[in-house]
Length: 223
Image 1 (tube, helix red, strand yellow):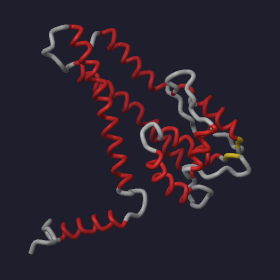
Image 2 (cartoon, helix red, strand yellow):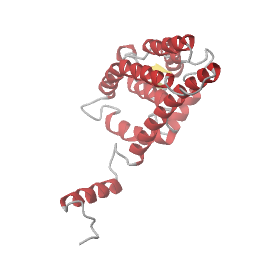
Image 3 (cartoon, one colour):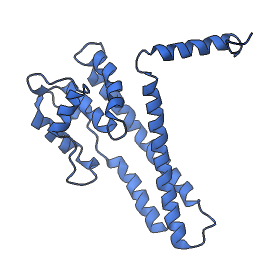
Image 4 (cartoon, one colour):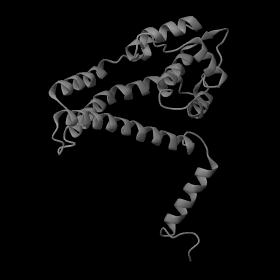
């Protein structure tokens, strides 16, 4: 890729550090009506919009999340801080996962931690996850720079400058897409194996594996 495009991509990567997240302190301490929820989300996540007219969260979306049991119903038409934490998680998850996958993650999450059913609440969970995400931003941007450098080194035998420029940018995009694909595939495998909850099938597989190790990695059918 030529120096102009490389500089532009580097600026794009660097700008990711400026993407705004909703911090734990941003969440209001009072319960909110539907209109207040959508307004809050739109104001605090507008930097993540691709187009200015994009809708981040609508009333229909929230109602569907409740209908699909991703979100506990509001109390007297008001949404608590716990609702807000879940909505933020949903916002990020839905760009990668299906509603069914999100439901499989949220069912044990809400069952254990929504409504102060545990010593650990959703506020503590959100704060810790937020801290982890902040720590990862620098590492993620550095990884993108490494991928761009590798893409620049690709198609070394292509002599035509326009072709080489096009193909190296294409290689960079492909590397980013493959990275997302692999991470998504990993998440789906974890969901399918119900690693967030009890799964008899998984338990039996792990039990058989442990028994196999005790027997010197021999198959149970072999004597």
